[in-house]
Length: 150
Image 1: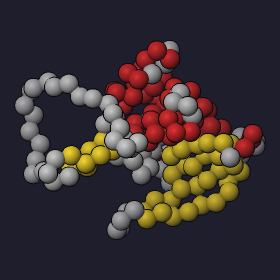
Image 2 (image 1 turned 135 degrees about the horizontal axis):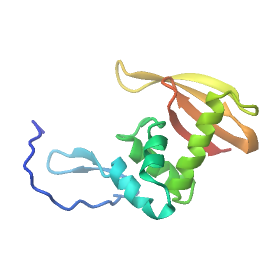
Image 3 (image 1 turned 90 degrees about the horizontal axis):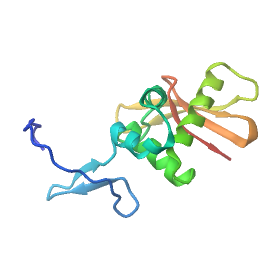
């Protein structure tokens, strides 16, 4: 790829996975692409009753982590670990992030790790343990990377 040019042409796009992955390679050059942006993620959960305002507030608290976009990470984790209930996964994640930020009782820091993704990229992630077997990983900017139940 040598550049991007706005053509004004509107074309349909499709949300699919290849061999279980939301990212895939296309064309002779094998360009790595992804298929979910925040607008598409919001459309997926439109029937959940979540407003755009709530969605924007929640997604603003997440980190993209090792994914191409924040939406890719949320979609993948909600699909693999939360039966595809994206809205519920986001809402609980937002609650967890607020509890940790407020240093609520029941949450304790388990470990801090430095991850390296290529050179010189690195990030710090703090893993927190919470009530009912929950855990959360927060990056060094305070954004939620993921959460789950042990």
